Structure formats: structure tokens, C-alpha cells
Length: 251
Image (cartoon, rainbow, N blue to C red; front, top):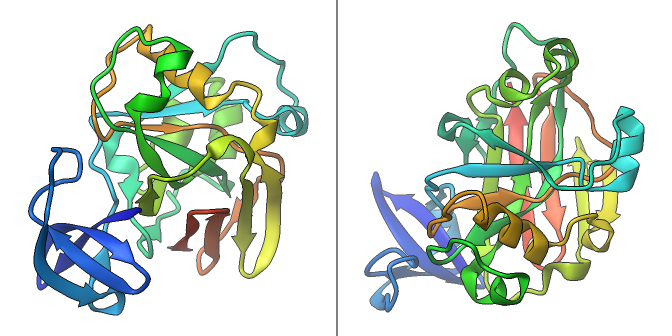
């Protein structure tokens, strides 16, 4: 099933998407036992929003070997975790704004895990029941500032630097999915989630040993090789097998 959060005539709703038909739900899909209201729209009648409003955006760095090589970083035994502020979050078709203090803003296409229930200290075997679904994400990064600062808060924390969407897919096996980043129609990143160094069960379990995860929290699972710069006027699309595409314009 595909779940969306959308606006129609300036009101925000949650819905299920089947083909091009949006079925309006009576409450958030994270609240449980949500039902269709009987109201429906065509997809082209609504504006898609970020499919979640998380309490935190957790990101995993350096989780594909070839990406580590292209950046010249060392391998880490444990997952490398960082946070993006909630103000980075934007939805499909919204603009990624290049900040004036950076001269090298880059795309990073990623599979995003959406947490479905509160969890703390779960084992890898328990993770499956804790995941609501998956979506596409772009861990936009000011690469020049990342190199300059030696840490990642500023370079990854600008407003609009975390597009996610366009919807959440629930019935999906994330272990072997094609993932691509397409810039102005040209494929720049092309890999598969089978190359994740730290698997999704390991990531969720590991993070849950550190902090409590809540429904709607998202985990960006890392980007493969092929990252590169974007400029104003560019169109960037993150495409993941079984999910679809997340499109944004750069300004």
C-alpha cells in the first residue's frame, strides 16, 4: 500500500493511493485503525506533502563502500549517525535552496526507513514489526563546508536540505532495490541496497540502543557512489525500485 500526506484547498489530509486515485483517511496512518472516509480525489487534484512529520531525522553516513572510497574516508566498524534539523524537511516538487555560503551543494539519493511504532532496545529480529514502510530521500550536502568544518552539522543542516517522499510504501522488501539519482535527465547514481554495509535491521536496532524511536521518525540509510554538484535551475530526481521518484527543483 502507498500512503500519502497531502493538501487540498489548503487543508491537510492523510490518504491511501491506488493508481491515480487518492482515498482520504479519517486520521493519520500512524494512529492505527484509520479508515477511508468515502471521499476521494484524483492524484493531480492534490498537492503532495512530506509523507511524515518526524520527531527526528536520523541519517547514516558512509554506508556504501564505493561512496566511502570516492570521498576518501575511512571505514567505520559501527554505523556513523548524524541528525538533520526538522527545518531541512521538504516534500516532492518543493525547491532545494542553495545557501549563499556554499559553492558546492550536492545530491545524495537514499532509501528512507519510516518507523511505525515506539521502540527502544529492540533486537534485529524485532525490527521488521517496528517499520511502517519506506520512501525516497535526498541528503543534500554542502560538500565544501563539510570539508571545511570537519563535521557535518552545517553542511547538511540548511533549510530544504532533506527532501523526502513522494509517499510511503509498506509492502516492500528493502534488501535488494535499485536506487538512482537522475540530474536533468542524466543518471548520476546507480546502485542497489544490497550493497549497504550496515543492513536496515542492524541500523534500526543499533539506533534504538541509543535513543527512543517514535512513529514517523525517519532513518536515511546512506548514499551510494556518484554524488555530485547541483546548481540553480537543475532538476534532481531520486528513484527507488518499488517506490517511485522524488523530484525537486534547485534554486
